Length: 538
Image 1 (cartoon, one colour):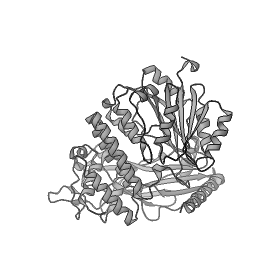
Image 2 (cartoon, helix red, strand yellow):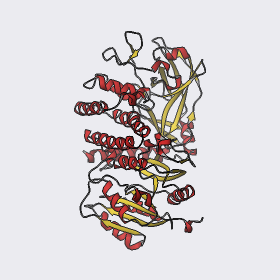
Image 3 (cartoon, helix red, strand yellow):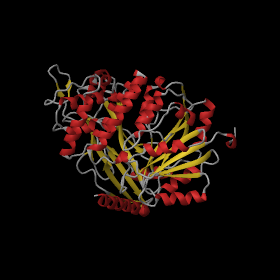
Image 4 (cartoon, one colour):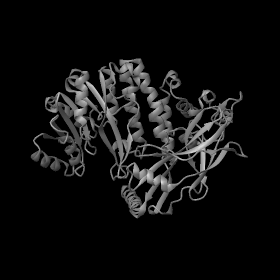
């Protein structure tokens, strides 16, 4: 079946006060070719020139239809519903005004849908951090290219993919089950729509093609709803969306309902916890709201979650207000999770959270070495080396006998990791193990350039540990005093190489490299741009 014989798609683009970006979104939909019969742009009563931009585009492109809402809906659900109502093609695809469809996305989805007779078809999506253009895959490993899921209840973990924009929907399927988004001011409307779709038990087909590029502009003057976390209201909205979605799924399938609850404990809760910040007022409000919601969870749902998620829930339930070591809890919510010292034992000698809050860390001693929430500190050891210290964890690492450590540099934009040479670990006089790990910034920058990273390279830094018993682990580094210093290093290859270690949002070490004068200037301009955007948002 060639492109001209494929069923067609209606692409629904929603926009509100996005005159500067909506044109790129609409153009990416029109560029999909004849498989896209119509692009329906819904202007949600914008107060800027968004409506005019869309009308001008429609005058030049007959496939573009513009719907102007008289009143702003306050959310994303109502304009999407408006688009579904006027769509005429056999399939519907959704697009936000600040994102884009990559070339061939619509055709890849339609071909897969037709091949497998699937009312819902899903493809790969990436979160593209701008302006750096770092692509982070959305839910990597959740979908297998070529897979066909006969019933969502056969794969309950699919509840973790809450996006609506990386999927193609058969319009007759939406109409048969009256599937619509929540109307009005409802944040995280995707959660509820996706739950309704899964509850309708469609066959789901998977294409391995990239079908959606989700632009993330953290330094924009007006951030997206999902990134606007300056007060506890965003978290409250997410809880309410999850509560609604979980109820829908539980009514359709106990397995889907439990998977939704576990997803909240393993994904949503840690994500917000690690961004808790230091504002006492926000912490208290967040803590009270979260404890109240966790009290509604069945113990069986908590027991089904991963160990670190269970421990977080139990600490939250045990403490009425944020404890003094609340930052330690945020590090346990990191990816990978890290349990910072000190390590306390309960009356029976088993691991507990702390002497002040003796919450049992059940299952910790039985975890495989690779799953242990170990902590590894890093401090400077010269200009091109770090001194690491690996903390033992209730004797578990001592039993495995760590032998060597190896730096792993993981490109945040995707690509192959770069590994340094392994270095033997030595027992530390104060307990644990330590080593000095050298690396060559120039070689790392050259590898990054070979992978297509030109002006500014960003690497997550991890360390792999091999043990005498044959086990191994990979963990992030906790930067200590003095490590986070920017340096300009002389380079025979680039003239100058700017290195900037920094701490990620989850407290882990990462590294920016700017090779050459052009790279250094790009880094400086990027920092100035972020600082200016931060001032303008205050």
